[in-house]
Length: 263
Image 1: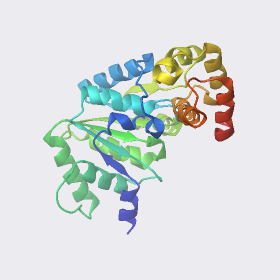
Image 2 (image 1 turned 90 degrees about the horizontal axis):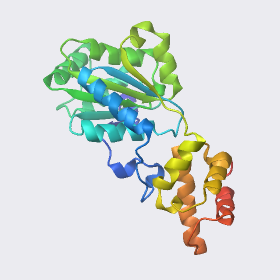
Image 3 (image 1 turned 30 degrees about the horizontal axis):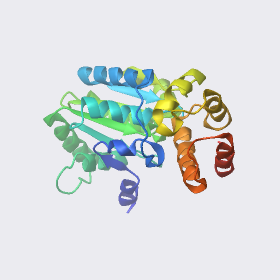
């Protein structure tokens, strides 16, 4: 019973559609070619070429998953398998998630040794990119399991960990793990200048909005977070429709603040 429950807590499979990248499925939102996005693409290209491991980490809402997914759609769309971990997964849970993500036939083996052998054989057949999203939920044993797969001379994989500062701290505490990470990439929230450059291109509703108002929204509510900006934009669009407005103004922004509270 426990295995079935934990598999339900694993999101596995191929890359999601690009429309799912933005929080709340925000329509007309654009992927902006920021320096961070371009750096992510360069780093992942290097990781794929080296068949290595990478750690992408930073605060929630800073665009980690969006940037990784975008880069992999460009570089390796047909060989990427993605797992999103939740609720403190054990190696057993990760095994079952990989079994599903790789589309292996039959029933999963019951013994860990047999299960690992099956996974290694599958991962030796052709090169694959494995993405472990929300990796901050993993403990040392989870990372050790990924290392065990990657270290095996038969497997043919690159591994990308994406998560909050928790995954960075766990990896850095363990020299045997940290020494195997080929690239570390830290994500941070957008600076004031980055917000000014990025948000007008992020969604058409902000294209002609005064810079001072964008600055104020970021300082008071968005705090340089892509996810916060997507949330605010969704409310802005709903407010414009409800109030029959054609442009963003301070009254509309205050109406949005009444919906979102402190952010």
